[in-house]
Image (cartoon, rainbow, N blue to C red):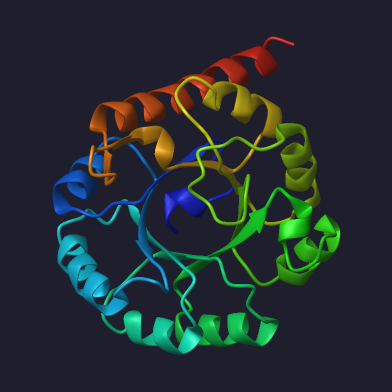
Length: 238
C-alpha cells in the first residue's frame, strides 16, 4: 500500500497541483509532497496534454502519487488513460454510481477523489449529508474546495468544512486559498486528511500564465509538517 493512503499513519497529506512542465514536476517530487496534480479539462486539447504528461511521468519517482484533475466525459477519459498511467484521479463531474463502478472495474488500482464544494448549493444536491452518502462508499476520498470550479485562491468557511469532514467516512482533502500563512490554522480547525494547494504556491506571469514557485512549494510543505508537529505536541501535553 502506498503510504499516502495508509490511514493508520497520522499526518497531513500534501497535494501540490497544476504542474505543466517536467522541470517543476521533477523538482517537486523530491520535497516530500505526497501528490502532484496534473490538469486535463474538457476545454483543453486533452490528448495533446496526455502525451505531454506521459513524457513527464516517466521521470517521476514512484513515491509521488500522480493525480489527474479532470472534468472530461468518461468515454474520452478512458481514452486518455490508455495514454497515461496515473495513481489517482480527481473527478469534477457529478458521476453516477454506475459510472464510478465502471471506472473502478476498468482501473481498479487508481484511487478516486471526488470534488465537493464547501458551498452546499453548488453540489448536485444542496444537502451535505445526501451528497456524502451518495459517494462515500464508492470513492477513496473527497476534495473539499471553497468553490466548485477550484483554483479560485479564496478560502472557504473552515467551520463548515470541519463539520463536513466529521460527516465523511472517506478521507477528505481541504482546498481553497491555502498558503504558507494560513495552512496551520486550516489544519488545526478542519483536521483534514490532506491539504491541496494550487494558487498558493504559484506565481502569475505578466502574460497571465501561472507557473510553480519552488520556494513557495518548499515552504508550504515545511509549514504543513510544522503544523502537524505543533498540533501533536499540543494534544500530547493535555
